[in-house]
Image (tube, rainbow, N blue to C red):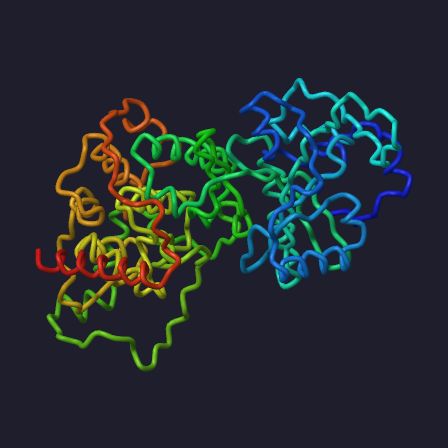
Length: 496
């Protein structure tokens, strides 16, 4: 990663040669692809030029303005290349800003796949000097190219340097992959790192899950599985698939997968082979020789459930990266042989959220609560079998959790409060069953999901859902209402 240097003063007045930011700077600064808001608008109306209005600014809070000013002051030279517009995201490890790329036309922007090929060079606006009385005003209109926006991701200094390098390297390897947000370039000043990414306009998922019909879901997941197929072909685990990390534009019917801060190569954190990687016969032999089977099952001992007071066994360590509610069961069971199938489970949770019209669908406080939520769906029998695959024991004494569990079709009907599903919803539910499979080796891959009947032989039988997209989930009253509905659904499940 090269250090950031401010451009010389004469750059602003001289037309520079076109340089490529997607392959000619250095290995850690290679770019890939991007989508700017202006280029998307150009595709819609076919007009690459528009009246330039310097007062066309976004409403920005004072605290955000101070934050952007602080970045410009602590990162010398960044204001010569980018004009910060607004703060569009803030997470645990980074903050993302929307910015105008001031030097867009100084480079060959191969990453911008949505730019209009007919666009010409910049048209310099006329001088803004006042007209003298009696002097005729210019007859031509002051036009210039629309501003090209990018996203600046400021990675916090608390992040591990190795993790920052890993994220940039993975984005570099994924350049050119469809539906994957690429790295344009990256700059470093002392201990600060700023990654330049494309800005992709999208709609809020809180609107999508209330308004999407099955046909919309089909376009959404075709784009998502295309991105995951590209990522998984490179043996890369994203590890944080969730709605906020897949920016979807319903007008273009395309989305981009973002935020590879937790991504890693498959097998890079090897801590030993998990029992699930062995054959079924070996797993059965290990189970029959375990302390649990010899002392608690075969001897019919009624030992109380709980943790041993003095446990001399070493703790089991495995990667638990991800977001609550979207972690796959093998992650919760601390599997040490995790594969790309963990991303497919998370994609299944998104599909369940859209079909059930409830967001978030799983809202556990920790891993134990997450396993209890799964057990209420799959039943204790299947959860015990899934735990045994990874050399773990699952036990619960909650009386409302049954042994058999429920079908996905019943669960979707209860969650969405409908009496019957349409044929298209049933088809989507069959895809859901293949994605949310407890056994990762039986779970659909991204390639297999794209070949599912949901995409290969779609059924067009949609009925618009009765939800009101204007209802906001941010207010306390609405949240209490959603909680009450969730409790009613849980009571119904318990009664059945």
